[in-house]
Image (tube, rainbow, N blue to C red; front, side):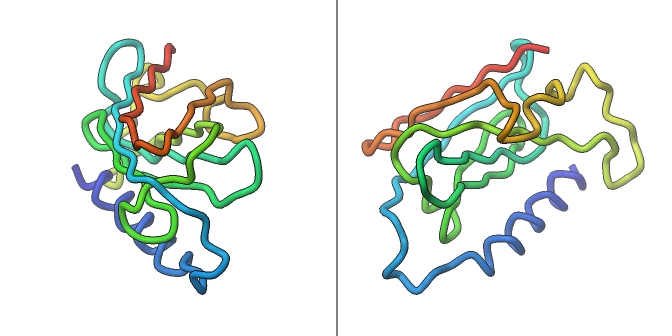
Length: 134
């Protein structure tokens, strides 16, 4: 639980300096979703959506397999279009407990350059359902 709280604060801190002047901001649509690893909800971590085309990435904290994305402001969503999906789960919790490899996505999902996942964010803000196999 503490790991999720720490991740949430990291995202908040990152987003606090991410706002723009408003003139250069692209339209976003609210996006929520679920993420599973080998059929089970991913307990915690961080999800990033990097636009395949130009644009700012969106970020969300994963808690019990659910997330809400933020780009410029808290929970404002993501820019519509195709996105590479990056999922990062720490190897150790804030309490020092090791998270078993079976509960973490394979390393290829931790980078925009290597992730095999691409999702489409629609202007209607349809929920995302992301499934990863270990």
